[in-house]
Structure formats: C-alpha cells, structure tokens
Image 1 (cartoon, helix red, strand yellow):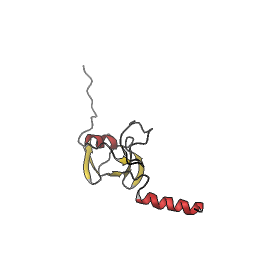
Image 2: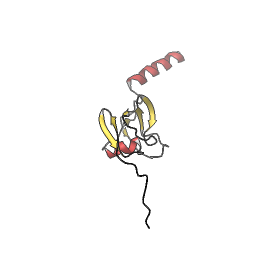
Image 3: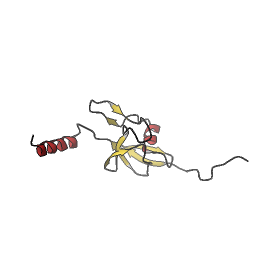
Image 4: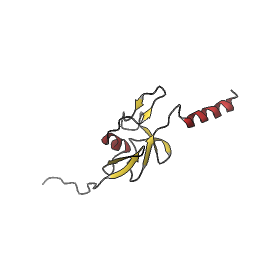
Length: 110
C-alpha cells in the first residue's frame, strides 16, 4: 500500500504584484508566487542593488514587500492570499522616507 495525500490543496491563489497578476498553489508564500511568476527582485538597496528571496526562512529580511498597504512584510513567511495587493518595498530614499528623515532632523534640532 502506498501513501496517498488526502488533503492536497486544489486550485490556485491569485493576487497582484505591482498591478500584474501572480499566482501559486494554496499555502505557498508570497515569495514563492513571485519566483514562480518570474520576479527575482522586489526591493532595492540604498545603492540601487536589487533584492528578493535570499534565505527563505525569515532571517535575512531581503525579501521585504508591502502587502495590502502594510510595509515591511517578509514575503517568504506570509502565505499568498486571494486578492492580495503586493508592492515593492519602499526603502531608504523613497518619497515617504524623505519626509520621515526631515521629521527626525527637526526633532534633533538639525
């Protein structure tokens, strides 16, 4: 007798990344869906280098994305959910980061 999976996930989960469709099997991570649809980099370093999936276990934080308006999400740790709106991470140098830097400078008296 061979073991047969009885609760195999069926269908696919669909979402968007930067307005483009992405999909994967139920239970797969956001990072898995991005890789499966040919996306390799989804955030940039301060110097403009591309970053995406590196460790795949939530330790390195290279795979950060924005999910449904919430930034700083580790794409390797979050299962893709139907209808998610995934965006590139807005890191140092982004428009909203400049506003935060200005506010910190004012608080410091610079």
